[in-house]
Length: 461
Image (cartoon, rainbow, N blue to C red):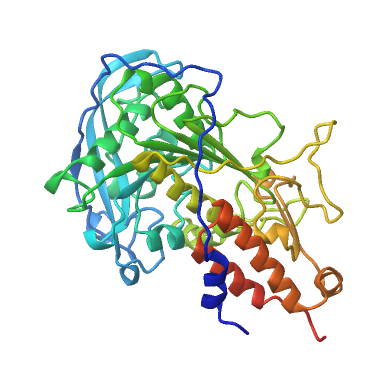
């Protein structure tokens, strides 16, 4: 068989990712006048302690960061460090109303970054940590895609639920953290300014920077699900009043702003998140992608987090869903492409390509083919050349509705669809070449798809 490297080279040969911008959305761009400066917080750290350790130890040096990655970062030329941020933040209502000024706070950020400038691409992905599960979740930390591209990733603890859980989990490490102003603001009114101040710390030069000696060119705000909703409030209601500290925004599997501002916004939705054909139109500062077959919380993230939750909480949750859970359509592949596009948009003015939306029937249901696969949207090879039914839909207890469905095809169905393994692999190559050409997929992810395809069991011919 032709080598994977050669096949991928063939797929990408001559491919040019063409970005373009359409006209502005319905709203007019909001002018900014006399913005309130964002304060630079005090940065303490790196905080000592690493895995293995004991979160309950009274000595901070014997503890370790919550959800510390189990990826061998050193082998990738990366380091993980944790820092405390403290200062005085302004409190905002979700309408943007200023409620109070200079409220004391203390929180933490977790940094995963290249160890050396030579391997840093200049862009920091600043993630608003998701707290829907009751604890800080680095929902958008995708180690393979982030480390191979040279991004720095920073997880920011901005909300009360996450910080309160940290305080109880490791009192020695996190016991003095507080993002409520001593209980005055318990609805995350300080979160918006804390998020801004974290960006100021990231941009700081010299010894006070949590990025060490790395030279930062671009800071992208990223957030998933509930965090995307918080970022939407930030962009629509708070950002018009304050200094701009983020260069662009990636709102993933969640809502996106309606305001047209100076900073570009990239919204990427899974099939789970698309409930109707109505969405904000693309414009010169906004791009919207929908990914067929992908779930709000799919297999890749679940598999990464399971051992970490077992380590840090004693067990990982199990679920009894109505359909087999966890779509295996790799939404993280599309998100990785989106980060690259957003960086080019910010730095060079090259807007990302548009993408078709998912298709809907007149009755409001999604159009599906005879296999049950959603039609329209970005169609990764896992959907365009399927070996399983992957959807964004499910039901049952707890979070099941977010997990999507994965039902593998048996060998009889595979042979009916493709007849031979070689024909199936060729279909994967065609699908990935199309997605590479359109800018929805990166070459190394196409290579992984090809490797996976060669391992599919078709049985005896």
